[in-house]
Amino acid sequence: MTTVRKLEPYEDDRGNRILYAGQHPEARIDILFVGERNTLVVDDSARFKRLSVRFDANDGTARLGTSRGRAIETSIRVGQDSTVTFGDGVSTTSVLLVSAVEGASVTIGDDVMFASGNQLRSDDAHPIFDVRTGLRVNPARDISIGSHVWMAREAVALGGARIGSGSVIGYRALVTGRVPNNAIAAGMPARVLRRDIAWERPHLSLTKPYYKPDASTVTRSEEFWALTVDDERGPDTGSMPHITARTSRGGSLLRRVRDAIRPR
Image: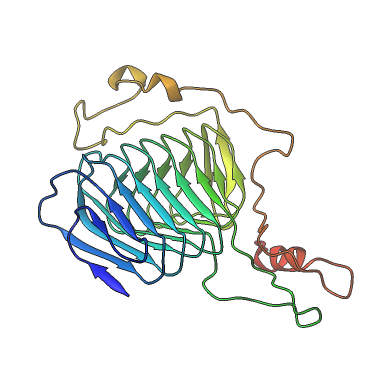
């Protein structure tokens, strides 16, 4: 077990590596290598206020792109055969928690804006088993976040979440399935509330003009001004796909969980 506390090129006799050629100012850096053949790749221009990466096992990879605005704060867990990827221009307001284990991947596109208290968790951290079959009911699943996505305060994406580019995930939303591009999704579990939307980064109070009644008051990110496209499965409907076991009475565990959390 080795802990690296400075962001600089590194390689050890177990095949663990840090690939980075930049000059990073003082920051809180904690990179833990427990296993073998793990790789951290950091863009030379990336900036961090806090970077914590824990490689728990073997053959894990983390790739971190360029920063935008304030320095990034993130805590990342990479498990066996797993991958975490940050695109370019990702920003965080506070510490972003990311976990990918059991061969899962967490992929974040370019120009994604995270608020405070966000988490991306491919896994539930602990296994749950069906008592009749002994099989796992909560396997780790991939997470994919497109480019130019805004994750509002305390929004969380769990395994199986797929968020299309240009979308907005609302306050304390829990995403467990698909959200299409250019849509607003909110709730627990998240549901699509509006389609055919576009958002921009300028703050309502910190950036002039202080009233922004229409799109003429901002510079458009033209690439992400698009109509929503739903695939054949439709938008996210609040499903919890990572829970798959069935009960002996013929109904799915998924349906029972869904019924339990449905508003009455």
